[in-house]
Length: 258
Ligand SMILES: NC(=O)NCCC[C@H](N)C(=O)O
Image 1 (cartoon, rainbow, N blue to C red):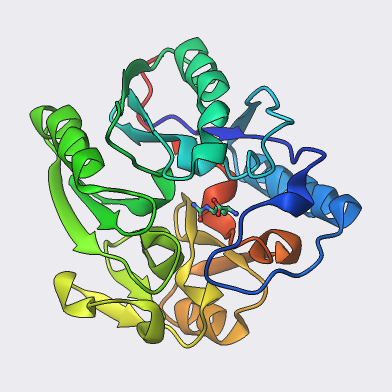
Image 2: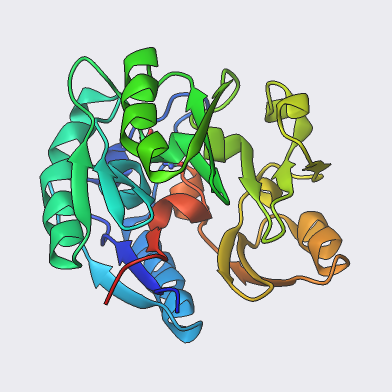
């Protein structure tokens, strides 16, 4: 029976200072962000996920984007070494949370850098984005960590967005979805479905055919509903101002051993 555990991390007091790289800075409303985060977490719970809060890292504005701190394959948590130095202090508490859930723990070491948002799993294939945050050494260490466990690691360039999963995610049947202007090369994926909006490319698989998506992508939601999926929409507008998306607000742990 697959596990349905998710790590989340409450937004901290410095959220509005979070990094922005590919978009213009817009003011963030911390109270609204907190409400949006609480709704996001509640939706996970409503769909059967047990959520664990990683201890706050209140000096780190981007700590809410907990997905970037570790990558799961099977029951192994590979601790990231974020490409942005300001985000590295987020990692120790993520390690503690993964250990408390019984994960085996490995880590990316200097000079490697890797952000969890650059890693997309489709079955045993692990796509890793080589972009602004993840370097060649980080990719090499990811291969060394996961290939012995049965992963096939496929590196792909990411130049138009922050992370690989800002550009593409995958449906339950393994089809990779993306908003074409932001995908370096759709031909790198065996089955690629274009979606008509940027945030329509981001789905969290809740289980069955349910897809957690941002509510700012109605045409994409309609496209996916037409394919027999059930979009579950949330407003994460305050996090999108900081280049966050639905995937980055949690780490899903689907293969823990009880
Ligand atoms: N996996 C993700 O998409 N993470 C979003 C991180 C946004 C944050 N402001 C950053 O630049 O690191």
